[in-house]
Length: 285
Image (tube, rainbow, N blue to C red):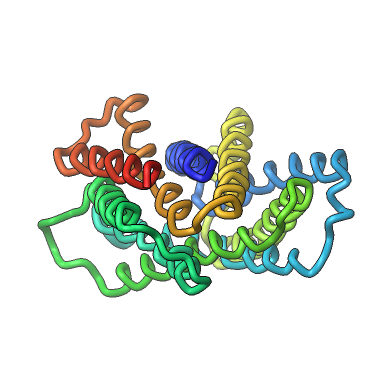
């Protein structure tokens, strides 16, 4: 069950990143984040009301609030890093986010077996390579590296926090709603401040309403990924769930190959293969 839900998380996050990347070509990145998360929050609100999720309100929701505060910061740092440095450095380095939930799992007493340790090592190596690391070229600014590490720490912290936000299905719906609502408020405030400073919040031609379904799909895929990761981490070792969930760059690269006909570099193809081997080791270990 852990492997299934964690791999589903990778699939959903990979597709969300792919869709979000396409949408940022038509609108500012922060606008894409706020609108997509806002649409997801609206759908989650309906689900919470329909399932009576409010009855699950309790102290655990503070974990969801914290995740909602950290998430936009991580995204902002990630997009800033992409704007300053090459994706071939930023994307693979951001996968270090897996270190946070894995570290939490080890701190709480999880001890993976030798086969699982080998699987973690192989899978993480594969994910980094699948991101297409830039092995040659001009030196990367220290600020780019710092922003990427901040985003990785933020993403990893969100993984750890959302796992603690609830231990029931209806409670998980409520936790995800609170997380997204907090993210929308935080991201909306950042968008407003950015607009006050003169940064356009909309494309020059105005908001493209035809992109709303795609924005909603991206937001819901991201929410669903948080949910499946939480289930995976609660029903199995966090060390395994976190690594399998971190395979999303492979999905994004394959989606770009399939839908945009982007050719995978040799290092990316090798990384995808290693990630698959690591997945098999973790699933069988």
